[in-house]
Image 1 (cartoon, rainbow over the protein chains, first blue to last red):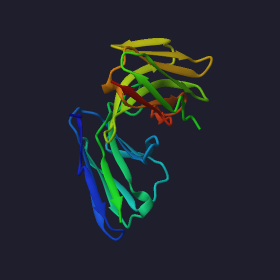
Image 2 (cartoon, rainbow over the protein chains, first blue to last red):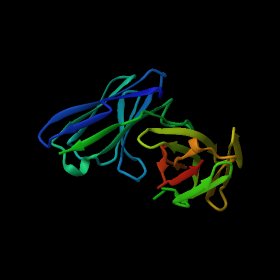
Image 3 (cartoon, each protein chain N blue to C red):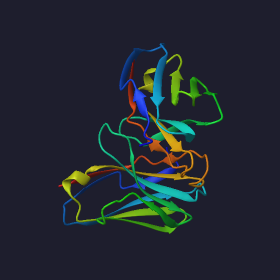
Length: 114
Length: 112
């Protein structure tokens, strides 16, 4: 079991739907991350939150909208996605984003866009 | 790009053999990390080695770092079928944030 919990594990949605991915950690970490991973590729950074503030947005399309309601929770709101957005979405956390600290990953949400 | 390049892309060995994976990168780093990803799962952190360190061990894992050659290696000794996974190196560029950039990974298959 991982210490970072992501829900749902699988999500199938149409291009007009609105859905949200959720991530939770209770390790007291102050940095949280969203990654996108296509099959047989490395994870690609999307967003970084540090102390509940968005610190990095890697030029992600606005159809992806992150939210950090508190230090333990991270959401990714999805709207009007495209078929090419189908991927594994990984959440990670670390003690802080500006130190030599490893990241702890959840098992991801596998997203399929119809 | 700071992205590391792992070599080989795929490795197939028998149980009990050693597995060595290499990672090369382009610019100076704060640290280099190795992660494992089992099929359909998230990444699991294995080892973090700082730029002023040359070698670290963790159980059957040994990581070396040669900053003059901008390369690192991950050695798994006495491999087991359960070691079958993708292995990624991730580098955090010096002078920037400590957020790692992942390489393309090595797919390791250990046959029982």
